[in-house]
Image 1 (cartoon, rainbow, N blue to C red):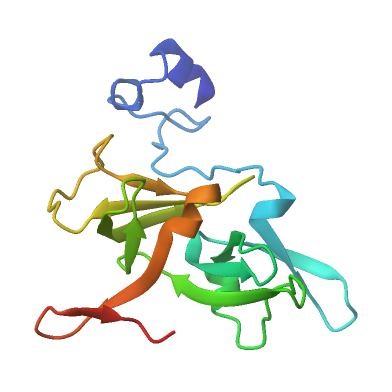
Image 2 (cartoon, one colour):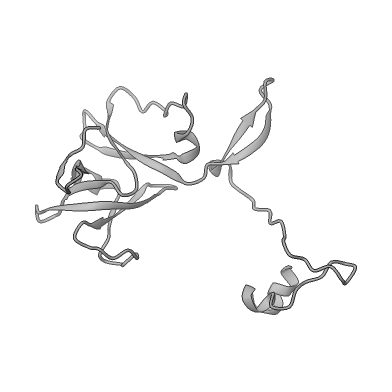
Length: 182
């Protein structure tokens, strides 16, 4: 597989126009198993009754992001919740301490009101959330109907500008925006 790909400079379409055959030279290879090395941050170990890890599951993307605020300093922090943990009934998020309170959760397609640098309030629809060292929430203005990602139109909500999110919004059945109750 790797040899064939390297012969065509990594172009999968050109590399596999002609099928690969097994060692017998007659049987075409139709499917292959690809192994992926994953880091400990992207998988969770499943333990048996004795407490030993016997298999691993992928955390499988982000379900939502929780926004917390420090009561003393007013600092805001975003914590991603992977889909695997969101599906667990008894899972509790790590405690940040008594000085942190949860403001709200944001999922894809939720709406937030954001105060820009000029003081103007803009409504953004959350498009996606990603993590790593810092959590990045990407929001698109409500007035923008384009479905594709357009640089310069979307807003990256992270770090200090999380403070500029004034509230989470909900849309009623006839399209009116109001404050969400979570």
